[in-house]
Length: 298
Image (cartoon, rainbow, N blue to C red; front, side, top):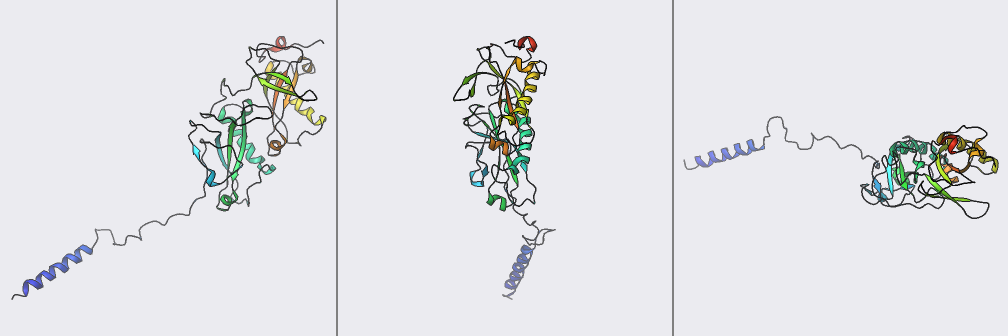
């Protein structure tokens, strides 16, 4: 009789163990078979609306991607991220005509982002692509990057700035091109334009942008004639004078196409400036009409 309690206890312990091994209703006790399998790793894609501290580079490896808030000092702002076709075999080479499609997209996106043609300000637009390693991993993006530069003339350097460029050209802005003073430099009467307040005596003014057709970069004097013709139309509309044969007797022109390298990747935006060879003024000639830009008789 002394062994009965031992047997009963053993049975109770076994019952507890068996109950403890059972799971709540609806669970089968297997902790692995109900989890969904992880999906494939997605290739890296940069974000738009962020900035980069470093200068622009046309090929961006993942290790060089370090976005910051645009309120912090930076040199590059990404205004849009587009995509190449998924079946494209390789990224386009830097500076190649294969970038003309992405550049055209970036051109339109940047204009919408800043509120006017970005060329109306001291800005430079460029397209960045993934590294070969990133491309092999499935990356198919291109990045539209804007940089503030020191001048719209040759020799421009990037400017470290704070604040986003979104809507930067929607209204008056220190970035916006306006009245200019011309200076002769070098040989053949080459001119450099220096920005000044319109109330200061000046002889030139930015009047707008003319989009050149897809043709080779100007190499001879005759190749420049269409650029001057296009800019005369822009000038006439800006000042409010007839676009006729007398226009050349009202004002000269300074024509600033993009460099040959930028032309090759699809940039066709030509900056146009009126130029007064015989006088200076202390006001803007925007909307001045024939009285503000009369036909010169000598």
